[in-house]
Length: 235
Image (cartoon, rainbow, N blue to C red; front, side, top):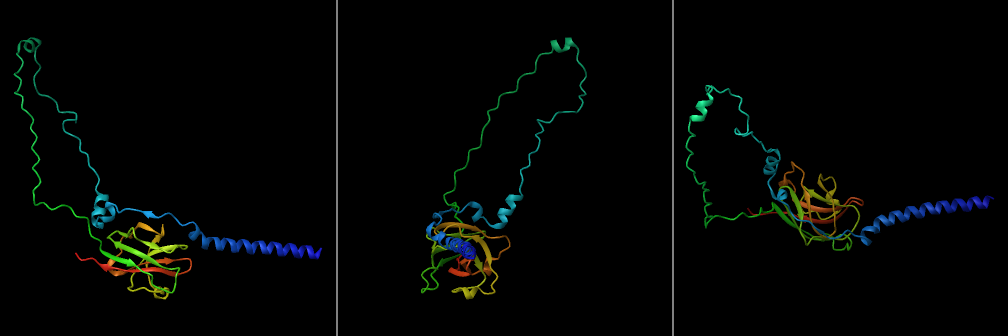
């Protein structure tokens, strides 16, 4: 009987350890075996608009005034009452001459009028493979930073892994995980895809001049995946 319970305990313990190991291994291997599809997001007008313009458009509400012609008239009339005979004998007033409604012609656009140009990014950068001796953690492709959005360009790609996040970092030349020790960063959210164009909203109040780097970071293992040094665009 003692031998039975001993075997039963070993069986339960082995099952628990095996299940825990399998779940942990699954979380680690899942992104490699079943990666999300490549992203293909596009920038919107709200992403390119300056913050002040977006806020003013949100506060502006349409105001509809009641037309004077549609408002009922409540003023009393002072005209004296007419007798039936006077109403019959009086000839109708002549009709006013018809006036043709003309619409002003739209003037043609001037030849020298400048066309609207899409806003330029505040800064741009390129993700790099910071540690060449590490074949797992790498990245490549361009990134563009606008006033309200960080945009990963279509050529963006990183090696797959779990719990990747994109950070704005107030430190230049981040090249290792140790460079992030004690650094206060802005977390823009979890990386939605390991490849392709993606857009991430910058929180209100962030001064982009204070953040010269964008990095991809693994939160689960606290490891730097790929950094990008930002270069301010010429205006």
